[in-house]
Image (tube, rainbow, N blue to C red; front, side):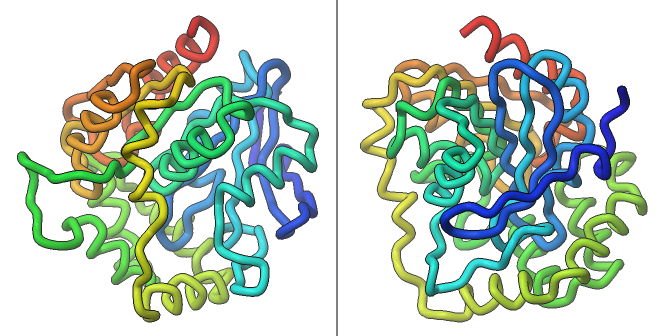
Length: 281
């Protein structure tokens, strides 16, 4: 049966937020965690992957609080995606899952593996940031891609969304008007999400606890696969090299002619790598 956004759409009230997600398949739980950016959702980030992976696993592709159809984050409940993910797993009775995280979702996957290793069977990061010094890519502040992303949060026009999807991909063929429109519609549907993100970045920036985790990575025993596009202009491939240098149980797979959205540009290879790793590691 073909998996569509409508047929796989679900909502659950956790102990923290109301969370929306897409569900398909049976077997070992695999949770897909999207990246940041206006209009990012579990469907827009992983629509070429949910159905193929659901042929092997029980797939959950989550809209994290502050994105998609999930509730907006607020200071009263707190802004902690690891806590949100654990609350989601608790509510659905998922004891242990393989985590597959793109960019921001990769940060959540890594942090969850450090804080709650007993809840993670496999860790797959994709274009995720790792603390450290870049030697072979531009330094001095936000990357080219992140600058476009932050501008699109301020002005989520169709034109800016087109620029966003273009910088996420190596091959402009994948930066389609359809994808730009999908992201723009999702962003405009929830201006409260945009306001929440912008307010967070307008506030004085406290140290991000995620970036204090690098010394803890050497203690991980979770089977780890770091995936990265060689031509990523948002988060350099050097970040995944740092992961594989720090995590004893890890390996790295870098794909040439590929940007930040490996799961879209090289979806068939991505699906094969994930399925093989979760099935055989």
